[in-house]
Length: 194
Picture 1: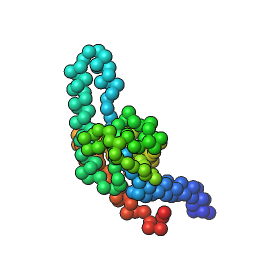
Picture 2: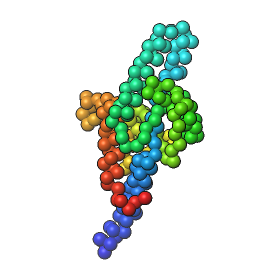
Picture 3: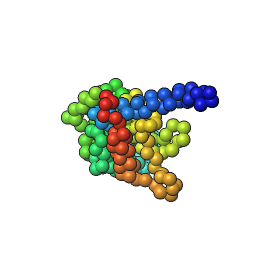
Picture 4: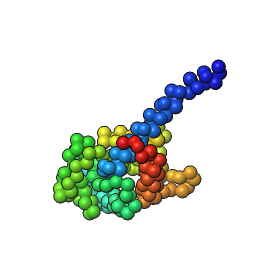
């Protein structure tokens, strides 16, 4: 009798866990056949504020540092990410991307807006370096097309700091870990699942 009650109590938990796994598997499959759009930042507000204060040299330094950071992210993705097609856009175009206005809002290898890049994905996901919900950890995150964080068991974030806090991952390392986890998740999906 106790075993029956225990099974009865655990059934909803198992069912809920199974549903979460199915959702994550479906998202992995959609990303595999879709597109990952990486959001890069411009520091536009900070730059404009510095210029307004007449601090043009500081503004130029912010532009230079932001460009180097964006270039490192771009190079990381184009070097090791092969799970799906990947494109890049600036945070200033986020609303247009959310509205599926891709043409004229995606970036080329020089990180310039390039209207010759034509993309019309069925499914797309967003990736960026951001803080995770709840924990507030800085990480490489994956969001849905509405810019909402995905949920486990989808590998939706890769922390900057590994288990050892002094071991800081580079953007390259974080992209490599994300790519590996996505491939591992794909291998776990039963072939019969759509």
